[in-house]
Image 1 (cartoon, one colour):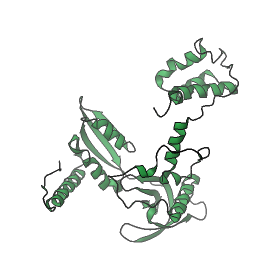
Image 2 (cartoon, helix red, strand yellow):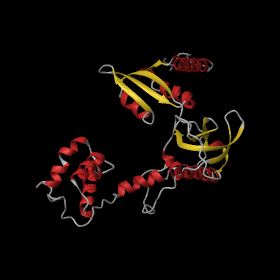
Image 3 (cartoon, rainbow, N blue to C red):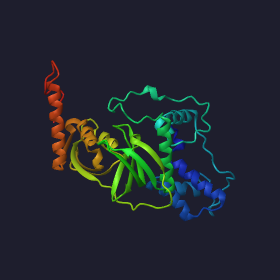
Image 4 (cartoon, rainbow, N blue to C red):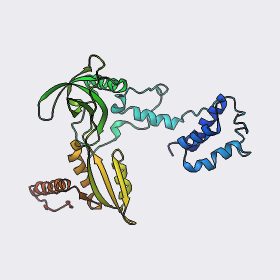
Length: 313
């Protein structure tokens, strides 16, 4: 195991309770809330009883503690090596994380050890100094609640220059790109950060009126073969979803997604093969059908290739 059990939820909850007890601010209500927030529902049956009972002897009846110093749980060498490996990712470095204490730690793995076979090769250039500077400007605007002046090239080749209100950053795993979702000028704008040519804080404190993000829904039925349910739910874990069990092996899943990601959603659902069957809406089913037909036409043009080989609808 990468992380030892003493760093799990039960120990975190107990440590938080004891820190409050050392500070002299622990109450019965606070004890219950800390367990609910940091552990699991069934923990209410064990942690308070263990702390206040004779078993652990960590709390007195008046909720004071014989412990005089708050507990400290330093990271193990393996955990620090894992964190160092994560911080080598150029996407994480864009957020300027604190790396103190890891200077002399050897990473557990390095980015060059991974080969991505399901990702486009023309993603954002995370090492470009101009890209890093613009990303930092966007990040500060989001954190400080400031408007931005942006100049960018649209996918149709037009140049736009706008004052917008940043709403959130999104990352597309398939495209390997960051996108800024903004509102302003009576619509929502989604801007690829790689297309930004200019980005600066807008003058003044004016905020553009926010508009709710537009989302589309699709529904598919899933056959839980080869651990498909877990794989699908994990793959779409970042999306709002509703899952309904139909029987022991079949489920109905409804996803809500950004309309600009529609082509990507088609590709991602097709990658699961026959265990996934889209049932609505009709236009999404038509997109999938056309995608399969296109793949079959491409396969037919390859010399020595069976048009139906490897294609399942």
